[in-house]
Image (cartoon, rainbow, N blue to C red; front, top):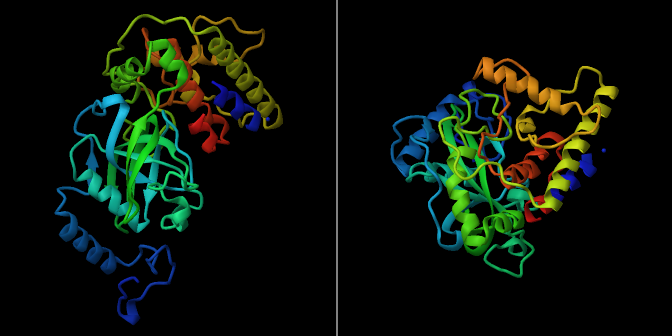
Length: 361
C-alpha cells in the first residue's frame, strides 16, 4: 500500500510507389508514408504471411479463459520481453498501437503460438534508442537496466491496414528478470513472479501465495469489453466463481494504509471538483474495491458514489450508462488482502504519476 500512498502525494527504407502516385511523406519509424500507401501495406502484409505463416484472420482473440501456466517457484522461462520507456502495472489493462518493427515482430510471433500469450514488460529508460546499449543489457546483472516489471497477457490483436497492430494487454503479476537470454531482434528472458509481501504473509508463504494467484486469476482478469474504450483496470470476470473463504481481516498496518488511500482520494477529488466544477468523473474503475466493513469520516463522498454504481449494476447489469460503465464490484468471498493489493496498483489509473519505483516497491 506504500506505493499507493506515494502516488497520492505525487498527485496533490520504405517501398516507394511511382512518383505520380506518391503520397505526402509523413515518416513514422521506417515508413516514410505514415502507413498511408496501400500498395506498400499490401506488400508488407504478404511478406509477413510468408515469414510467419498465413494467419486465418486479421483479428486474434483468446479462444478461452485460461490461467497462466503454473511454474516452479514462480519461474516463467524464456518469455518475450517488451522494453518500452513506460511502466505498466499488475491489474492494469490498456489498448496499444504497436508500430515499431521489433515489437510487431514480437507480437506476431507470440500470437501464432499456443495460449496463453504471455510476455514480460520491463521498462527501459530511453526506450528503443537503448535496446542495443550494453549499459542496459538484461543479460548483464551489473548493467543499469531495471529488472523489475510485469508479466503481461495479450487478450486480443488486430492487424490494421497500415500494418500496425492494435492489441489489448493485461498485467497479471509483478516479476523480476532472473536471466536475460538475448537482446535482439527483441529481448527474451527467464522471469520470476514476485508476490507482494502482504500476499505472502496472508497466504502463509511464497508457494502458497503463488497458488492463490493461480486460483484467482480467471476471476480477477476478465475479458475486456468489445469496445474501443478499454477500462484501465480489469473488470472482474462475471463468468468465474470466487474461490477461498469470506472476506478475511487485513493486517492492521495494511488496513490503516488502505483507509488512508481512500480518504486521501476522496479529498483529492473534492479539491479537483472545487477547482473544476462538473468536470471530475467518478473513479468507477476502482470504486468497487471500497472496503464494505470500513467506517468513514463525515462527508466521505465515495461511499455514496459506490452505492449508486452498485444499484445500477444490480438493476441493469452490463449497462453502458455512466457513471457505472466501468464499475467492477469485488465479489463476495474476495480476500481483503487481494482487494488492497489491487487498489495499490489501480489507484495509479486515477492519479497518474506511475514510475519504476511503483513496480519495484
